[in-house]
Length: 468
Image (cartoon, rainbow, N blue to C red; front, side, top):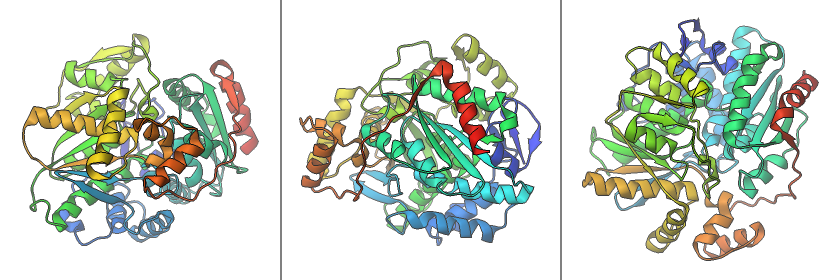
């Protein structure tokens, strides 16, 4: 069973997945976090690990049904192992971009529609459900792809106008489907995310859910690649069985790194988690001081998927760290009314760093020069944090750097790292000349539909009614 971070009302797994957000505005957490010994998964494929981990959270579904959906979902990836790991000295880049939209969001968003299908069957729901989701770039394309042609489900994606890369925007705006709508909101990602949360709470009569990581069905699949990474390093004899390792995660909404925290609490030998941020360093400052303060300048950076000041999944993290779960209501109310709160319980396994845009470009160039390996700007932010962490810790603990997107999705920024200022087409060609294997995808010109934030509620309501 599941309950909200802000209350004790229990719901089933199916209800949690379909609701997305709890009715009190909180996020769903499982009543008792399962423990999974990685030794029980050591002979499984990635798909087998995924099925067993999902089943541990959602046992009301049959394991064979989950396994079937997992197998089908990951057929769209370009590697049978679903993810890949690239070794660079004592760091290991975990490539999570081998799905259909070239970003880590695919790992969960090819599965979420299938979990929703199982949940609807379990609850005997026939009505159309509309997925309303906000994106800082990658969730939108991955959600549109994942929910493509899913019977009984429609989707509305909101993204910040001018706040995503051209390729991210093209992926979303070139999508065509009778069950989908994409809207650019004149604001930043936090505006989009706040709108979604408010809309979900206000319009329960519209049968809504979300594909953001606020949805527990989106979050749980992300635990899998932490287990896979550890087991892989054991199998290839890079670490001893039982040896602790670190994970370094580029972090915006705190969902990806929170999945790593859950894996740690479930029994995986994770020593520390490195929280890597860009110039929007709200999380870095929080972990250094205990003060979460969103009353600050918002920056549009060259790692746009992390341009976030309100990290929604941090609420779940605070819930697990707080001795009194009822305190979460206090913190969230302070965030809403004053834009800040102080959290007195500092975790000793989180190390946080932030990186500026020039350093991000320099790292892209340096990693290519040193290893012949291209990384995207978000992964560069993570590598910068890894470098700072190594200086601070002065040890040789193996570290997995979570690589969240293909360089292709940020081709212009990658080229800028090499002193080249190109349009999208020229940038893609230049990456090919560097020897980077790119997917054969042609994007039409962007046909953007935008709406003012003040007009969004009325507009989105009408769009959803048309889907019903």
